Length: 193
Image (cartoon, rainbow, N blue to C red):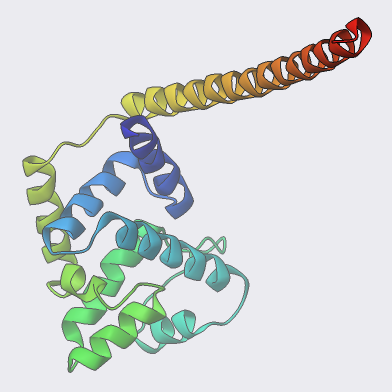
């Protein structure tokens, strides 16, 4: 349903640790270069997962960032945001020697190879694509997404209650039918007919 799709935007943005409006801008930008919504959601989720791993241990991502003199943690040990990581990935991809290096960089960031299309113009190109997509498409407010999620939960809850009550009613009706059949059978036996 439409409310479920809208609610999913908020949930996917939360999982990717990106502001809802920014998530939608990036998603619209990705769609403008041929990356479908599910692939984008999955990619950003993969990026957030890679960043989370990089917080705790040495990974291919931390080695790549260190090899390129990119600071990925602050003094308190906080890792860069998903949004900043996308910009860093874009700048690394734009400097890559060939297509295979671009793909390897994207994959190191937890992104699928198709993300190269979104990131190959660098961080400034990414911002331009997101801004153009945002002005051409509709970026829903956080309140609208929140209301859609509430509606979806209420609808699902109401539907579940209806289904449960319908099952109970069918069971009761079935029992009544069995009792009626038993009564009819005993009536027929008792009358000698």
